[in-house]
Image (cartoon, rainbow, N blue to C red; front, side):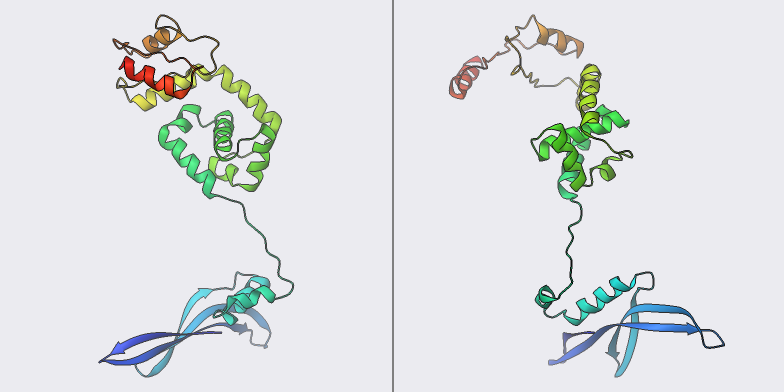
Length: 250
């Protein structure tokens, strides 16, 4: 039973509105006296207009005996829940994490990554690899283990389980469909407008492409005109020299 008090100032005088929360069991019996149904309610009693009234907060009939007992225990020690730490035979279990996966998924959805990858199983596995890479810089096996402690399958709608072999095969799928995915992502981000700024990652290239090479072809496919002065920064110099070169080029 939980008893709480709410202070109310009436005409300059301080009084207290007493609220008592409790669990009650209402049996329903047959004409012969046998128990046919037991209704378990979470209720509270309070005073109003000089009388005592009751109202039902929740119907606990669908809860099992352990859940009802836990609510009784919480009500009993409501004013000092630290006491529950000394209660014996209490097992603590942590549920699956949702915050990190949902945050990265929502960002990927807003950026159009989810739409570019598609709603098929391969697209969803690829999106999970993106999310897993953001949360934990690990291997395919670590991505599988990460999905076991996060609600990845529920959020992404992955109906069947997967292992590290599925993720490695998914990387091959990404390689085969890379061009199409990039075009859909580029079209979705641009929304039919030519971008004012185009960044091209050459960090994994063995040589720096010139305007007449790969970059020009990519820009022409995207119907983007090359600017008059396009700086190409060497990737093997420190950031101070890179920044200085960039400032001179602009």
